[in-house]
Image 1: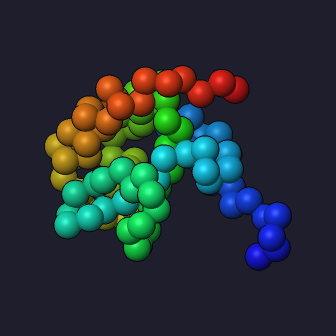
Image 2: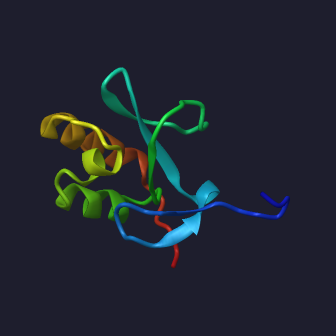
Length: 95
């Protein structure tokens, strides 16, 4: 990896590709999804724009988070996590 290389990730909500630092990382810890805000947890991660719109879009794509994390998350655990995440993501991302 070159010093100026910025990893690009895709938002699960809107599908836009953005630099990794602009997106929120979600991973599984103790069998439940968590926002890995400081990128400390090991394992597979999924990325989401920190906007209410993207959380709403992801909520409509039922099972998409579990699929991206390659985990057998119960649907209610995924939905509950996204529901709790919605108030936190108040800032909208400009295109």
